[in-house]
Image (cartoon, rainbow, N blue to C red):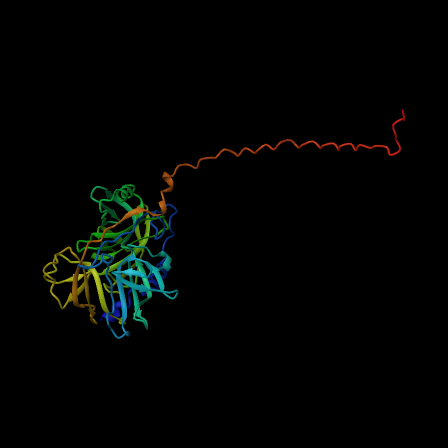
Length: 398
C-alpha cells in the first residue's frame, strides 16, 4: 500500500540513515583510511543561480515542480518537489512558500538550516495553508542528484560525468559562465542539483564546486540489482559494506551515500525511496519532470504514474512539464492539468569570487613599515634673564 511506502519518505530518511549506520557498525565496518577522497555537501564554488522556466504565457519565474493544495479545505498537506527560483519567501514554480524558525530543514538526510538554501536547488517539502491562505512550510529537504568527483568533462558540449552519472548544463552562451565552467576539471568535487530525463541524464539547475567532507552520494532509479550490488546510471555500488534497511529491486528509486576509498565508491547508506515521498496528509500535487519517450503508452513523471488525462498534442517526449492532480492511495497521480514549461538554464559563476586554493597566488610579503623618524627633542629654551633696575640708583648730577 502507498501509505506503507511513503513512510520511508523524506523525513524518515534521517532515522533510516541512523539505523543503517548502526547496523554497519555492529557488522564491524572498517575504519576509513586516511587517504580517502570524497565530496562535500557544503562550500562555495561554481554556482548555478539562474532558472528560466514557466507555464506557457507565464512570467518566466517558475520551471519547478510543486505538490500543492489549491482551493482545498485546509486539512490536507501541501507537498513540494521543485526548484528554488527566488527568495523573499521561498519561490518554487511561482508559489510563495512562507517559513519561520519552526521550519525543519535537512540536506540529503542531514540537519541543515534555511541559510543553506540557494537558487537552483531542488527541494521537497510539506506545507499547510495558514489562516490567511498562505502556504507555510513545515519541513523541507534539499535534494542533490549527485555529489562526488568529476571523472570526465566535455567543455564544448557542456556535459560532465560525476559518479557515473551524466550531467548536462545550459550556459545560455554567456561568456563569464562559460569561463567559470571551463575552470572545472577532472577530479574536482561538485554537487549537482537537477532532475533526470528518462534516459538517466541529469539536467542540472545548479552546480556547486565543493570541499571534501568525506561524503559522496547519488540518488536515482536502480537499473539492475542483486544481493551484492546495484547499478544507478553508470555507477555500480557494492553493497558489501552497507547495511540495507530493505532489499532493492530494479525500478526502485534509491538514495546511496558513502565514501571514496582508493578512487572506488564505498556505500554506507542505501535507502529505497518512493517517487512521491509524502505521507497520507498530502493529497494534491504539482509534479515537475520530463516526458518519457514511451509517454503515449504509459505516462509517468519522475517515476510516478500519471492517469486521467492524455498528453496534449503540443507536448513531445523530452519536454519539461508540470502535472497537476490528486494523489491516490496507490501513489498514482490523477491529473487535472499537464502544462509544458520552458527548459531550465543553469547559470554558472564563481560564488563569492572563490578560487581553488591551489591556483591562488602566494601571499605577497609586504615590506616592513619604516618607522617614521621623529625629530630630535628640542633643547630646553633657557630662561630669559630678568632685567633689574636698582631702585636706589640715580645718575650723577652734572
